[in-house]
Image 1 (cartoon, helix red, strand yellow):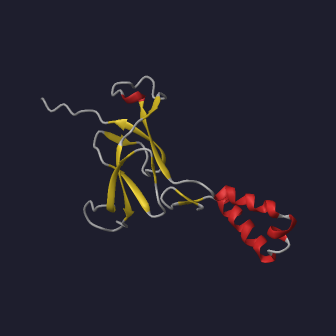
Image 2 (spheres, helix red, strand yellow):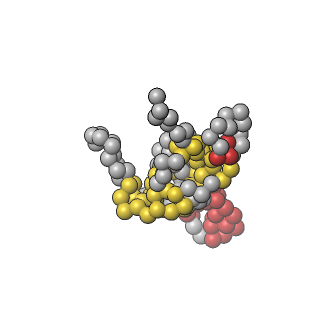
Image 3 (cartoon, one colour):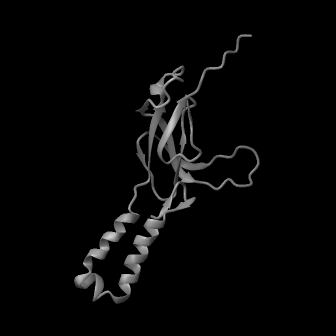
Length: 144
């Protein structure tokens, strides 16, 4: 699919690959079934799996602000379910319906959306798709 990041960004090379095959199908016998069969390779530009993999910033240490480039893969519990449109709804409505709790890395279907199932981490991006960098939440000190 030529869409990326929760259907908000359209990939130009992916659309170009799909349009190349569609236009070559206008004369199917002489192009794809003839000597220009290699035009099918242009579809490879449009192939991209939808997934979510999590990286923890600082290697999981809370006080590791000196080296933010230290990223490590982490298995984090996430909810994967059908996306629900929440634009214009009051309060904090649920963004998923019919979700399942899984551990990262996860593969996503066409209409799926992901949200974190734990409050231990906070994402550094707004769209939870692809490689997502997480930061451990600092514990609040309630003693005053």
